[in-house]
Image: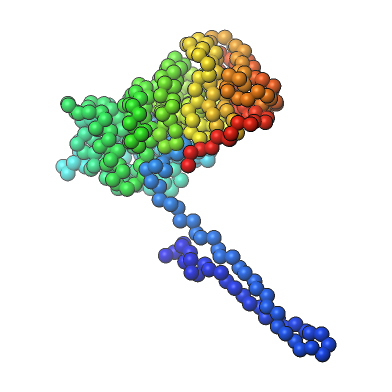
Length: 427
Ligand code: GLA
């Protein structure tokens, strides 16, 4: 098979070089044996096929059409968005999935029950679109609904779970968002989501399963490995109040997040125009800190440099993608709609934490964190500003920053010397 190394051919090549030695006066010549051992070439990397459990080991990153485009979608939009994701540098920053939301399908199923795309919006079909997206090094996601109709009143998947999952696999879809509108009379949310989860698993194709049931569904979704992420709230809006209330609600089930299973506080609004860049920076920071999926929801084809810089901030993304997979939480008990807050996320490494100083008040405020509040050992710690990407120095017992209204300062705190054990990701 091309591209694979036969282990027999890859075995040691041994050359025995016989060289004549000229012996001393009066003695006979004797050959010396030099062994030159050429190590085998490394085996050609054959990628291990992904399984359900390997998917979403860190929060998924991508884009979704709904927040900006609602039902105004088409294959040209998805292609242009794929192009923009590459050209803007977002792919290289870690974004992978291009997710088509509601309204992609035709008004009716085919006579055989299969679900076709709207021929006007997607004239080339979904497989061709998946091929285009895959050729860019990206992945394609799509939307279905567990009821009889989607929220936009297109055909739902109730009773068609296996057929629809097979259709998705035949198109080489990589991600499914499964919505919760118009449940069939007498149906059960739990059964409907488990049915689709089983149908996806049975296809054998690795497809990330994103439940969209507008509230933490219960520990069964993670303990039974039903889904890789689940919406914890109703729909996000492009306003500060919406962001803050969703953040509060998403923090309640924080302990259920971890590699392969994430709380989803909905897609990002960064760049959609309803908030200031300071507010968008806070929004992005808090989603990163909460180990939320980072699914951009703006028009990637028309972004300001500030929007690109927020969505691509490497050290902020790095805390979101930290392999330990802990969801950050509020420190202390001072939560309130207009108060400054301190949030922290334990990172892999030796007692390293990301700390967000979040100003929910209407005025600039000094916000302080003491290392003791974070449960860190007594003693000095280094502080790095993750937005400025600069080291701020070593601080003996805490750090204070002036934070603008609706703004955030995000720092990485690492004790200079720590006797506590290193935190490593579970195997
Ligand atoms: C629901 C979901 C949204 C979006 C719309 C589409 O409201 O929560 O994220 O998918 O449906 O109609």
